[in-house]
Amino acid sequence: MGRGWVSRLDRRVFERVAAAHPPGVQAVLPRLSHAADHSRLWLATAAAFAATGDRTARRAAVRGVGALALASFVTNTVIKYVTSRERPLIDAVPLPRRLKRQPRTTSFPSGHAA
Image (tube, rainbow, N blue to C red; front, side):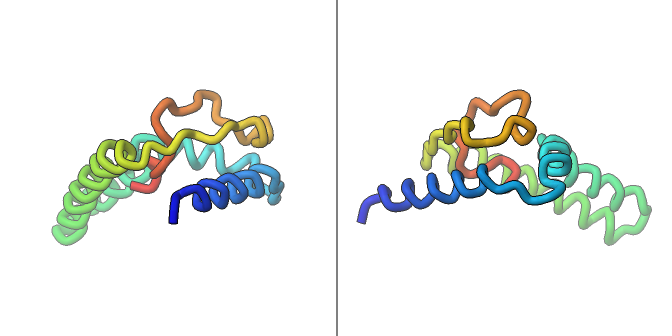
């Protein structure tokens, strides 16, 4: 069984999501996506844990940052290289939901997934 059916399903799902207009999405998701770039949300969470002064929280922060580094490396280098999924055309995405700068890397998996 080839990957053609997966590509077709992926395209249909993308088109349906792009056509959807759930309330609040236009205002919230672009900002949330931007805040998640470069793992800023997770790093801020780790910093907050470390700042508590609690030894267990600091250890959790260090382990979390280590796991994040490993997941980001595997996601953004190994898996992106293996899958090489091209980014879909964004013509179907409403203008307010488009990113100001489109990423240049392949689209799967998303770096945000790390």
